[in-house]
Image 1 (cartoon, rainbow, N blue to C red):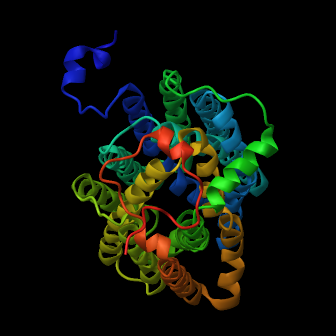
Image 2 (image 1 turned 30 degrees about the vertical axis):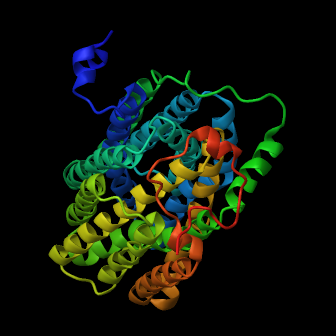
Length: 433
């Protein structure tokens, strides 16, 4: 028995912080420390080779395209195989791809196609990891304290993102992007080792029968039969696309031209991470009755960073904007995870998560690839204002749907068996007036 599993340690922990939850939290912290710095490093690796906005967008799109292509398959596999094995295999692929990327950057000038290929491998790993990880996390907690557990998990994860972005930006400025990518590769290796100890014995065995297409259809019925679910996913298909283009393509360019380079941009991203920590702390105590009404209202501020970059505002103002945006995004994130945990049967969690992820990133490759041509056609500032306006419009559209406004937190959560027996409905029983 390890010290972390000893009775004395367990007695000091809340009842919802079981072994799987702790392993998932620690491994998420490790990967977020590496990955948030690596996001900055990848953009500046392209710029340091003489690339422009179009090249940065192509590398970003190369990561998200395989993510879109393989997400649904990843969801089916994660509901069929032990989820921790899928997570470990995906982490191994991410480790190898980031290590190769680091070697190329440190050895000399990497070619654009090489950077696109390696980021595509990373996106492929994420496609299989994401649904498995979300299904594993959602099944690791039970009862009415689930929202608090998700808030603590996200607070830990976002605290790591805060540190990773700040340190990563500074390392890019001082040491160059190659070393930051190498650190990310090591982080994936450590996280994969931790996740190999996850216990899946509590997850019921899948019933025999049915192939991959049948599983996809079953997951689709679960997804399409809940209007609150697909409406929010459609909303974020647009919102994530334009936010991704603004921050992954235009953000580094504005930082280079107006804010002072990688260091200030890393600080702005770190302030976003600080905001998410503040939002998670808030959600540890605040339990809005109408989960998605509160969460979706907090999506409107996600338009602010694009608007701030369009001006562009001084770095101090941008940091304040990013902090507020991070806090409100976290309110949505915890509310969303709580809704999924409450409404989706355990044996379909990864497939529904895959449809969620798929919709949320489906337009991201196109948006990032078109960010450069849009800048050439309309200018950087009008393009950024367009991103901000689209976020506002799709969020207002989501709020016009009754089930989004009325999905209600259960005061006494139904068991998973009850959720599995409940028919899929377009109109939720939990909606209020």
